[in-house]
Structure formats: structure tokens, C-alpha cells
Image (cartoon, rainbow, N blue to C red):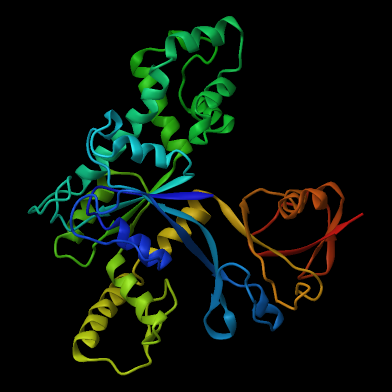
Length: 394
């Protein structure tokens, strides 16, 4: 699972990325500070399973935090790409590279500068409306999908009809490089009343509408409304929510980065996504003032929004659930408690989980033991978020 960070130049994408991953990346106040994509690990946050059994987990990947290891942070792939400018779908700026980098993403986090203090090219401005950025990026993404369709549509659509191919399967194959699935296409065709048996009859307007709907279906997006600490941000956020129907979360990436770095250095104790923190070392007046400002933001919004965006993207938009391989003793051969936690698609079964662990485990599946009740469940058992299962094999 790969989530792509997108946005206009100087929107705060790299700050968001560094806050989410604590990777050492260039953060600068000029356009195209990011040229090559940065790859790192973002983390979703959930209550760990181990404390329910009086234990503290030892994750192989990710980490636990909080009293008695209450919170578990499970990793997923996060990518920060170059800022997008108008005309990217035609190769302007770093457009071609940008779109190629995004092809493998399962969802987008669109970081939008809500301050109104930079324009669409990342240059200083006054009272700039952030909704313009969202409209432009929407348009460029739609043109990206439309370009792939229109390049081959006449021949492609006639071939489908002549050879009596399944339209959904044919279109999914055409877009396979963008991780478009047959179900994505079917979902769009159910919503749009176009004749799937005669795609050659679709008008240019219908093809455009289909391309946009397919983009939204296969690359779902959430808005990280960044720089909400700035004076004009609240009014811009209100206007943005009235104009667009994407999930929108108020964010303060710079504040989150400061908190995570201070926590890493032992200056404070902070759990990502929480509404407060504890100062554990002596700080100077400048540091105290900065932390006080961040706390004011937390008091108003409940969090910096960064962890909320990550969780909403993975759990709500991509519909993932967390599943623990959990034997009777809840340890691996080295004595590590619940070392693994897997993110799986909602609706997955116990058999799907067995195959996720290993092909041979899936092939030799007999039953699964539900750790909380010690009862057996079959291969068709539908997994629930935070389930712990031991897979029994032949």
C-alpha cells in the first residue's frame, strides 16, 4: 500500500512528510525544493492488542508508545513528490516525472496551504484563495487519466465491440499501470449511465466524465488543510469546505514536526495525535514560547491533524483493518510479544490472512483460533479490526 503526498509548490508537503516519518528531507521556502520523490514510512495509530492480555508488544516494524504500550503505530509506505504546477499533464514544470511517480499510489493526501500567503507557483502572495490550488490539481489529475484514454480510444473502443470484450476488464487493463482494478471500473459504470456495450458511441464529454470518475474512484484523496495557525486560514477553510466534497482535516505540520523532534530528543513526552504533551527537560524562553503556541493550537483543534490524516487515509479511505498473528503465548520463537501487525482490506477472511502470512500457510489452512475467546473460526470468517488469530495448518 502506497500513499502519495501531493500539492502545489511550497504548500508544506515536505514538512508534512518529515513530521510523519522523521526522515531527514530538504524543507525550503522556495518552489521545487523537492525534485526526486522521497519515500518513507508513515504510521497509523491504534490501540494495541497486547495490553488487553497484560503484556507490552515488541513490534518488528513500527513501535508502541504510551502507558503500558497502549498505542501501536503500524507502518505503511508514504511518498512525497515534486510540487505540481498548472500544465503538469502537458509536461510543464516537473509534470511528467510527477505523474509517473504517482502511478503506483493507492490514495493521495493533498497538502493545501491555507494561509493564502503563497500563490499557485509557491511565490509570496496576499489573500490568495487555496481552493484555486485544489481545482488546478484536480484538473491536472483528470487530464492525466483523460490523456491515457483519448490516446487510444477510437481504436480501443471499436476493438472492444468487435471482439466482444468485457469493457470493465479492457479498461482496467489499459490503466493497469495506475493500479486501476476491474472493480474500480465497474463501480464507475454503475454510477454513470453510459452504454457499456457500445463504448465507441460515447461522446467526448462522456469520456471526460468517465475519466474524472475513474480517477476519483481509483485514486481517492483527502485534503490536509495545512498552516492552520495562520491568520486567514480559518476563513479559507470554511470556504473550501463549502466548495469541495473531499474529506478535509485542519493541519499544522510545522507544529507536529516540532513536537515529534522534541519528543525524539527527550525534551517532551508526546504521543502523535494527542491534544497535549509533557515537558520533561528544562527549556529556554524561546522554546517555551514556541511550545506554548503549539499547545494553543492543540487546545483549539484537538491535535495537529497529521495523525488524523494518516489514520483517515488508511482506515477510512483505503478501508484497511489491523490484524495480529497471535498464538496462545502471543510470542515468536525469540520471545517477542505480538511482533507483527498486518494491514488488510476490510472484508478479508481468515483464509486471506493465512495467505498473507505465507502461501503454504494458506494452502494448508485448517482453522483459525480467535485469541480473545480461544474459539475456532473457519476460512470464511470475516476479519474485524484488531483481531488476533492463530492459523492452524495440516
